[in-house]
Image (cartoon, rainbow, N blue to C red; front, side):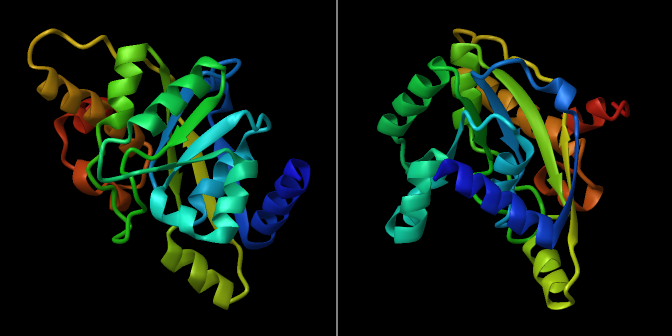
Length: 221
């Protein structure tokens, strides 16, 4: 079934998109690392299964989709973890840690949901907390061109949509200090998001468009 789903994902994306992927050299060898990505449209989740030859990965998905029988079935074969977005989900966090320790790759959007206005929202701190606490490597990945409006418009015109995937250099976050942990957690979250934002078109940077750390990464700070 997994082989069939892989073929199906590739076939559907080939028919409706042109995917340009760059930065494969930045992916660590083996698993056990985090891919942190922005979330512009409904096709974004499928990009991981298209771009990565190794399907030893898992994706956190909002708990509301578990009520959908088709997505619940797909989740068993595509390694979804259904997670509470608005409350601490300790069970899901323990499962994420277990899978990472087993060498799987976590693909996650720190924003928590797709950008309805086609701009980055403020990132949530969960992945930054786990990555700093457990020393996980993070690979920032920017997706551009996957906005639902663009994809739907091109489908109506029977055109393929060009979607770009860009992976930046991997990095790790320092351990948390004993003091000012909340402020440091926000700093770490902003670090992840700005490393994604710097690879995006300006129109998609949203909350981080004027962030001082983004300016530093651009060489303007």
